[in-house]
Length: 159
Image 1 (cartoon, rainbow, N blue to C red):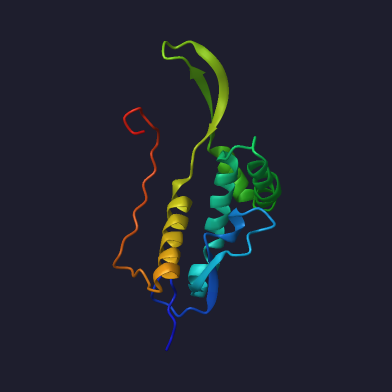
Image 2 (cartoon, rainbow, N blue to C red; image 1 turned 180 degrees about the vertical axis):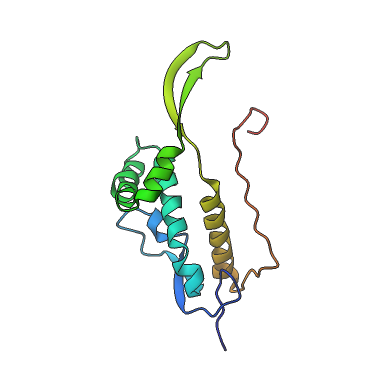
């Protein structure tokens, strides 16, 4: 019997894919990372998404914490040094902002980096499909749509 890819549910699984991507963990990585059967397309073509996911994650996590700082310095900076295109894209999403009080008084000038949602939505979908397979030994087929929503901002009503 041919084993199908746990991610797409269509192609023959010839590799194993880490769910979530192992690159988001600092070294030494946990020894019990989940892997699921995957086709070459779902596994190998996700590496660019993984890099984008890691870079945005690393830029936005607190570098005041040891693990966040290690993620940024050991993995994100390494990725950005070898992937100049991604580095430029992230820099192009950085915009100057003025932080003000509700009455409009200037508190400080800073920068904000826009979040690239697409890689995150696709990584989250792959992770959900992979974890579903891992826990239920069933492929969540293409008939099932995984929808992800990110809030652009939080209000007191949304918390």
